[in-house]
Image 1 (cartoon, rainbow, N blue to C red):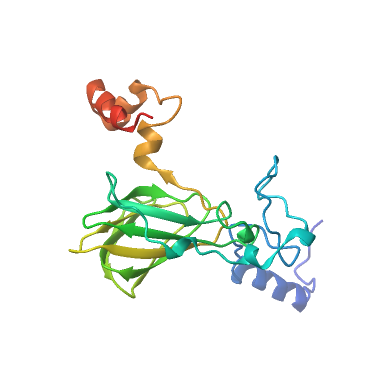
Image 2 (image 1 turned 135 degrees about the horizontal axis):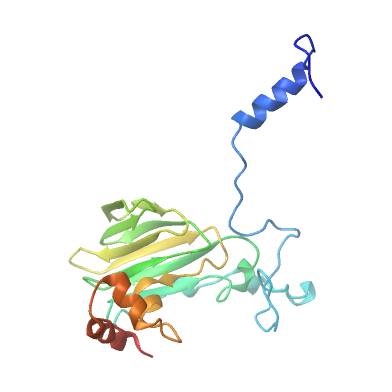
Length: 224
């Protein structure tokens, strides 16, 4: 069907087209929106689909909405000098379907929260104590970093590889928050060199451009 030059186009139609082209597309949180007041997760459920089934409302208590797990300092006596205490749906079922969670991360002097990513959430964090180098790498392979101290905040966009390292003289502490009740964590070293079954050596030697004995040496450090 052809429209003649003299055809009239509705002003409302024109306005609709302009709004579609100009207005930003709405963005949604990482987790689905709620369809009820709350859905305290049933950790005993055998089946989970994008979240945990709800505990029957008759069994919900005030304790389901409070969690003191982040109040305790973690044990940093390990190879990384770091301890991560999760406050996600698996430790705090009251978060189920709410689209939020938090972690506590403790650092010994020199401690490192090794490079990792969160596939399901953006991360924000605040330094409570100490002096930390915080950095992430964009998909354009640009490295962004800054040394932060108590009271300063950072953000890491969803899915990007990032880390935090204690560069101060004493201990350090941060709290991090996520827009997912279970953001997930892909730790690069463990994922590449400690997967079960193992990633074939020829894949890793080609990817890292090193000899096989180097790959075997690294894998030995991450074998379970």
